[in-house]
Length: 314
Image 1 (cartoon, rainbow, N blue to C red):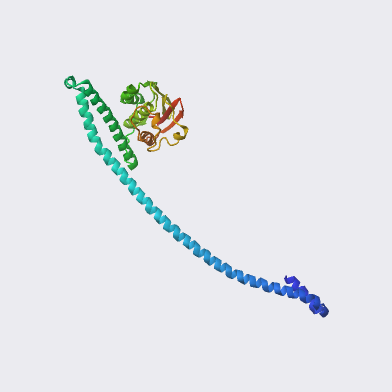
Image 2 (cartoon, rainbow, N blue to C red):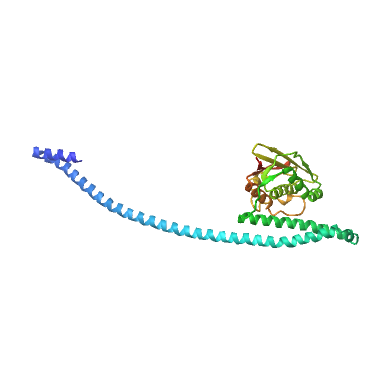
């Protein structure tokens, strides 16, 4: 553009007759230059305005984002307080229920084991007392699960790690569920021989095995079976609890250890309903003792729950 102007001016002064040719070119150059300056100045003003608008918009977005963040944190804090109150209420309610449940159990046990008393009551009354005892045991189990859930949620679960012999613990757990296996004619095959000891809390390990056996009975079929096996490595011991039940749908396996997750009541033996805490507690107990747990299942063939615990290495 500038070179065109220089050339035009050169010819204008060299040959005045060339003005008819050069002047239009010069005029076009001049108009173009004016337009360029005008456009530059205009867009500079537009750019300044746009920059100011963008700055104000960014400040407004930041202000609203801060306000939303404050509201979110406030709501989150309120939810935490509500959850804490729920956990505290759950703990208090379960703790208060434990004493009367224990008293009822003690009283029923005393009556049922008293020979003189049994000679003076009818068979029907004895069956009623036995049914009360069974339902009180189930209530006690529920209270225990509620207490453990509250302790887990509040982070106050007491874990005492020591050398644990699984063979003894599993035999005790089998005795715990004996009334269930007899009621539904379920056979338990304990194929554990002498696995190496693990480093864990014996009370919690017994609860883990008892929960798994209880579910294996509940989700089994009449005259079914439960098979307990184990494998071990230099680092851990792996226990398998396999049942011959109806199996668990594949879409339930991913959430099966979530709190309050329940499987269809149609797949259970007996009339008692599950509240969906047993598997959640089991996973939490295993995990907090440094182990893992998983479930595999095939519809129509049964399920296998496998948990691992670290070995007690000297």
